Length: 314
Image 1 (cartoon, rainbow, N blue to C red):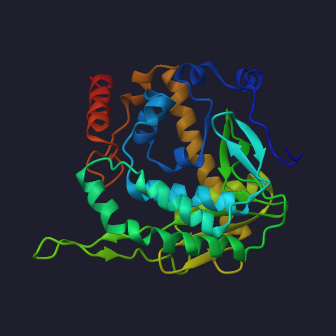
Image 2 (spheres, rainbow, N blue to C red; image 1 turned 180 degrees about the vertical axis):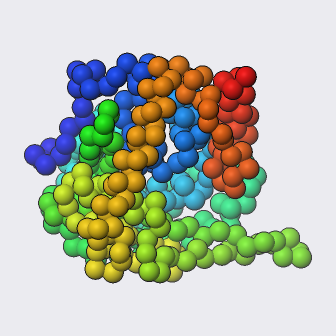
């Protein structure tokens, strides 16, 4: 392991810095993902559910494809890889070739198990475009010419008022880091004969997606390195940095970090007010059950969320 990799905090560090209310709820850190979602969804996912339970929430082929292509690109370009099963970094001495990447992608797609009939329809409708998506993501990584050692999934963190905010960079060298975002195709509305055609999801034009810019700004302040956001779909790739968008300038990223600090303070207040009680954490929140995607976490999980909120608010 190289010296620039930050080690994950140990138990003593957690206990020293975490108030009891956080410990009682099992919340020992925030993340960009946590701070990007609504308070109600955050409280359910991280105050009610365990990590194992969160891993069983609804997935879909777009999520799977984006993660798979990201993993393969790390095998193509990174010298050090993080193993989630051991929590250790390993040396990637023989990088995966692009052709090997195509083969790995094909095998991963073949073994994918759709969540439901809707996901199966999406899977069958867009899986043949995965190779083109990987090709463009690969070219995007290659264009950045990162200097060895390139580290995948480096754990980075910033201390907020009570606990750390943590995340993992997709790839970084000594000067810069890359955040990869895939824009997977969707399906158009059914034709009269019931068939559906592929719909390309366009890449951002002038600015990266706001949640992506905020996440990337956090990584910048946690690493001190120059940020790049790579977008890719089945037709092209595009890279944003401080030279072609406002969101990744010094001023833009400072604003994003301040936003995350405000979001963390809101969660801090809820946690401290709850005194470690899950019911008290949920009591004064108002979930938007009609949101067009936020509570698309699986029918059973959504019903469970409504139940625990009802019980907390009686």
